[in-house]
Image 1 (spheres, rainbow, N blue to C red):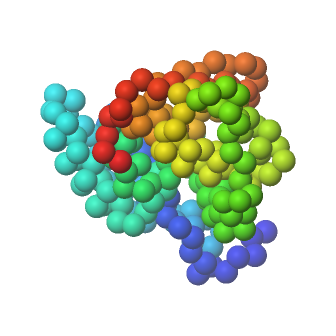
Image 2 (tube, rainbow, N blue to C red):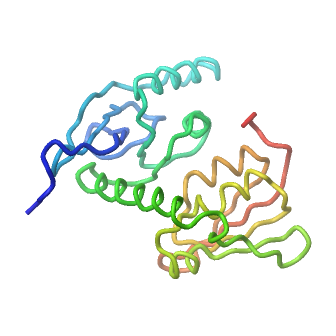
Length: 220
């Protein structure tokens, strides 16, 4: 039985949903619903239809995303079935935490909120000095196992370990072992001029490889 006070409100979480009520993508027509924990449950607090005209150019795309960000109005957590490309770059640049999850909101909202809280607490407690960094195996070539890091310290997120390292871009190659491909890595890699390839090694184990290819594709 839930013992939380009924006036207890948590952060807002937005999700793009298809007609079946499951998480969808911004490239498909759907509804963006913003949820907030109210007591023991998550309740929808606002929603808007979202559909892109694929014949329109980048300027129109950015205008549509600006409209979405204005609607989200301070909500900084966004869930989609898959997250890649220019649409998600706009959210990333606006400071959103983006989650790639398949399913219905009732199945994932509590998990997202719990993991966001863990990341927030870990950032406060661990500090930069306590977060592992990729090891240089050869000049310009680095490696890290996020699975191993999180096996020892579950509260540490891939973003805490890698985001600043990738954004600084001072490497030629980076190999990462993890259990899934975090959507933010794909966006940050392309933004900084790195290609990203993935190889499934086994159940819940993926090898990612970032390779330097260009000067970067955005101004972040």
